[in-house]
Length: 600
Image (cartoon, rainbow, N blue to C red; front, side, top):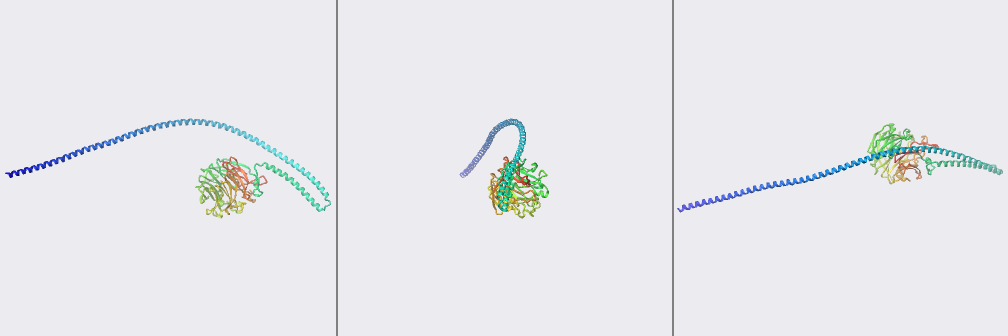
């Protein structure tokens, strides 16, 4: 019984233990469930709070953004209002300026009308004054002519009266001499006949000398009266034949008017004695003039900048019987103009601002040009192609010249029949002057630099070869140059040295030339040349220099309104003078103010 009781108690204890474990497990499970539920609730609560916080932050950000945008919008609206206000103010100002401008324009128009009326009135007054002046000039001219006739009559009467007085004086002297001779003859009757004859011859010679001296005195007085009437001073001259021309002073002859800017280049035509003159100017035109009538024949307008140099083309004349003018300009073109057309028919591009010159050989087939690009270029006129480029100058090349045509013994050939075989053959050279103050000599065939002459202190504006017929020893082996340093210099190619410097100009020298003194008759031999050189300058003078004596011989003073001598050239056509049947030269110069003047 006790055993069963123990077993029963044990079973009860076991059941209680099992029940207790189950309760504990249930409690633990409940605790875990409650904890899990609590965690779940907590998580749900926190997730809700996070979403609410997130939503709140986004709303706040949106609100901030909206506030910012609103603020910016307000600012923009304020700025727009301000801009609109400024625009309105500007519009008002513009309207006010327009009103003021219209008022000023009306005033100006009214003033212009008044000025037109005043100008018309003054023009009428000036025309009336001009008519009065012309009438006065005509009257003065008539009075002056009448006065001259009276003076001539008086002078003739004086000469006749003086001639009568001299004749009477001579007659008296002759009577006195005859009396003296009779006395001497009476005293010498005892002297031998031979001595008497000698004495008679001496007395006769004395009588002839007295008569000759009397006639010389009359002629000398007439010459002195004639010299008083000359308007130009004649400097002391050499008795050499090559300065005989300068015994007759140059006088103003005529003027070509039409250019409105400096005349930079001129050239005479020698074809068929046409006596044409062409000119290039800063007014961008090339003009052709009749030398006899001074009338403009043609005006070519095609260049867009200054026209610096012009020249008649010998190639086109001798090969195509066309009168063609070549011009170079600062617009980087060299153009050829036909006299029978109104525009250029040929153009060389790429070279600007310098001199041009046609070759003395091959009938002028080759053309050289200097440029701002420091080079010299040789062109074939026939093929319109570039043949050579000469490089060596360090600054702009302003002037170029070919060496003269080699003498063939017949000057009538000129260069129409001369051909050097190949260009530059037979030793032809080229000289150039530049802003680098040097004169350079080049071999045409090889395009190599042969010589550099240094001595000028400023840029060289003009160069010239001496002609082969010159009176200077060496002929074409000398080069003449003029510079902005106010000097004229002569260089010897053989010795490579400067041989003369001529100083006297008071401003820069713009152009130089040899004085070609000779006969206009082809049958008469030409006298010595190039012992006289000439130079033009900004000082408005053209001066003549004696090469051998290194002194100034003569001076031509241009007009005060010329602004300077830009270029000059001697006419190839000499004029027959009434004085002792001499041939005289004429020279033409282009002025910096526009007119072209001729002196002779």
